[in-house]
Length: 173
Image (cartoon, rainbow, N blue to C red; front, side):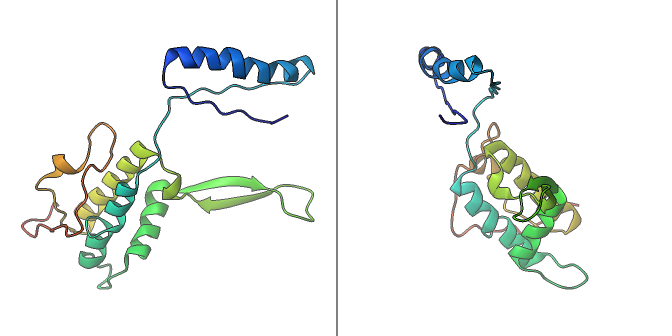
């Protein structure tokens, strides 16, 4: 018997049928055996997209920051900026893991990853990174046709261009 069941529904009829024909048959024997069942339901969120990832790592975001920003007169590569922004905007998570030879679970603090972000959360993260870079580091981004680039409802990058021009007209401060 499997320990968990994952169901995704896109319309009411299939949701109902799935509850009756999959969820209940799965939960019933566990409950009869005296076990407990937890059901968590949430709204589906899409994973972040390859376009968002490409936008983040390209000249449009981290590339522009690496090209323009200096800290104490030193330029850093995109990976160094990525690590700073993860630490600053995503922070750390505390996880417990089992280690061979140890009785107790070991508590570990590790930096959160952008790869775990969903579509909207990645959109928010991109906004935070760019706002910080523009206001604190004086980085200038291509914002001429911003409405064409990002879907305001989802944070999804709707267009990518390999040769993203950077506007050098004014810094946001």
